[in-house]
Image (cartoon, rainbow, N blue to C red; front, side, top):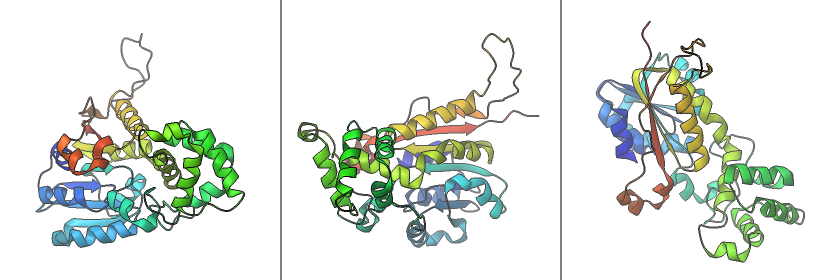
Length: 307
């Protein structure tokens, strides 16, 4: 949802904007076109390969692009390190990028056989193979149920533990075979790939994705100038629920009992939710990129009270 995101950010030359999930630089390129001359884009990504690719793709913008190898959850310290005291807008495109899925050796895709990795930052110690081969059956079931919303979480966890007792599960292809054995044939006949939810759950666990979202949203709003907007794109219900609740709490932070005639807790709204319902991709975009089908865009605008 490139065009929708850029439109909602209300960009102008001279702005300082953050792309917290730089990826291949798709959003970054369009944002830089809108904020130059005079503007700066801070592009953050945990994936060093993504940063290298974006630098090359966007080299024509020169010093207007500042690339940072880090996690967007550290936005406060990142800006301090760059001596930047505030930003005018930001975008977080959550989840795994298309080019990461297409890199066979990264282990994100259940459609390609490769090492079971799934680390966005290859310097992280824990990979998907570690989770699959060392976590208890109970923890595996919890991850698949909570992060993947997998109906067959208990059976898949049981089959994984049984299989790894014979030999380690070290490749995506091996894991897919185990999942197909665990999911009943009737359930595999229709619907999405039977491994989709398990792979989603493992990726979230390996990269600690959900842990970062709520805190990061509050931090991005805190470092944003009045009138700035934060656009967040999610790709599954767990992410979207967290974003929706975080935006709502920022808009209505008051903790006073409803019977109180006036607020006494002193918690003032940080701004306003711009998208009461999530913005969905157009039919044309879905046709061009089927991965965008589940995308949802939500936008928050910072509106601080004077005084």
